[in-house]
Every structure is written in C-alpha cells, then in structure tokens.
Image (cartoon, rainbow, N blue to C red):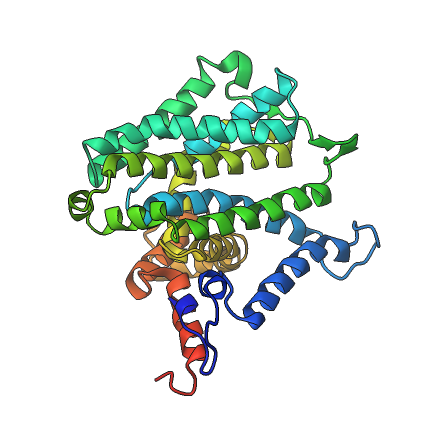
Length: 370
C-alpha cells in the first residue's frame, strides 16, 4: 500500500523508478543502511575480531534464529497470505530440508553449498505431492490434508529412514566450509544466514509484482472468478506449494548447519502452529508480515512471558484457590501465548504489518494524515 504513495512533490520520472522497490533516495539509503548495520552487529560483540563489548553475544544467536524462521514463515506467507491455502504441515517440510541436507553432507559427501539448493528443490518436490489434494479440496479439508504431512513425514524420518536419520536420536551435521575455511562458529554462520534471509525476503516481495504473484492473489480472493478469467488454478496452487516448501527446506537446511545437530522434536505440530501464529500476528499477505511476526513472537516467548509467569503464578491461586498449583507454572506459558494470539485476532486481525503500512502512509501524506 504505502509503496504506491510518495511524499508531496515527489514524482516518478522514469519507468525504472516506477517499478523500483525503493522509489525514493531516502528509502534506498535507509534500506541499504539497515542492511549494513545488520552485518556490522557481530563486529560489536566480545567474540568479534575487534573484541568489542558493545553488544551482548546473545544477540547474534537470537538474530540468526529470527532470520531462519523469517525464511520459513515467508514461505508460509506465499501459500497462506498470497494464495489463501492454509497449511499445518510447514514444520514437516522444514524437517525434510534439514534431514535431506544432513544426509547429503554426511553420507554423500556434498558440501553445504551444494546440499542447500538440492535439499530445497527436494523439499519443494515433496511439497508438490502434498499440494495435489488442493485440486479437489480447499478450506478446512485442505488443512486436514496438509496436517497429514505433519504426521507422515516425521513418521517416515523416525522409523523407515532411521538408518539415515538416527530416528529419535540427534543427528550430527558437519559445519560448512569454503576454500578450507570453516563456518563452525556462530559469527561465521551469521554471514551466511543473514544475507540469504534478506535475499529471499526480497524475492518473496517481488513475487506479488509478477504474473505468478497476481495469479496467487486472484486465487486467494476468488478462485472461481480466477478460473473464469483463464487462470489455471490448480497449476498455480501447486506452484505456491512448491515455493512454500522450498522456503521451508532452505530454513531447515540453515537450522541444521547452524546448530550442527537436528532432532525431530524441533519439527513437531506445535512448531507448525507457532509459525502460523507468527504469520497471523505479523500480517498475512504483507511482505514484512513474517519479520514482524517472528520478531514479536520471539520477544513474547523469550522476554515478556518469562517476566509475567512468576507474578501470574503467585496471583492466580489467590483469586482462584481451587486451581492445582502443581502444574500451573508449566501451563502459564502456552496460556499467555494463546491469550496474546486471541488479542491480535480481535484487536489487529490484519497484523502488525498492516499497522506499519498505515503509519507509513500517514507519515508520507502529513500534514493531511487525518
């Protein structure tokens, strides 16, 4: 929305400027400056090459985790936000990317740089298989079809493929190398994950500007009208499933090589639900929705909820004395997270990205924002 609005007195003077992602000089400088600042963060920590203690080292791991899940949720945004096909099997596709890349590296001797694209394409092909039911079913029934992937894929990885995946036991993953240099440290992996995350977010943003992206949006709005206009609905749905699974495969591969070991416990149903909640909170159908959603949920689960658990645990028994306090501590975290999701569905159903777009429009058309 706000990309189509420029401040008063700013006009497009060429076609290239009209189709640019950042249409003003200030927007370009701001975007490039934020990217450079993001790359400088590891240099400001104690474990950086200069030994500076300006920022805590914990920030590096947090930013990397956010970047990995932004890639995964961006893929879910292509499927849910742009195409309107709800999926509850996204964590399973991440597992396919993680385990396929680990198997390629461990058993086939492939480097990370080759295992990453191959595992992503293989995950995309798996996504095509589970996207086939979209020809006949949609809505709640498609949710059930994608939920089948969340049970079938982990079962295959746990039992029939146990000689390759170690089943329920952790599977070690070798660190990436390039020209003899190891990327085993957290700071080194940072410079793989962050640029790749930024590139994939820009690619997803550009999808809506293409013929394929416009077909996705038309299917989301009204698939019958889209079919009457000559759009091959089934083919574009399969493309959406392929792209969504491809993004999930890349995220799973990065997670595997970042942590150097993977377990199936990281790819269960609750992970799929959490990623869907991230998209809802951030704003489905907005390019910045995954970033806002992932960042907010990480802030909520890592900082806000732990700070609220102890006061709420002490307060609830006084108001509701019949509640058993033994399991109250463990139940408060998911309860508070569920309440936060309910608040967003009621107060801001279009997510944080929609509020951000309104703020940017109001800023650009000031002083006539009312």
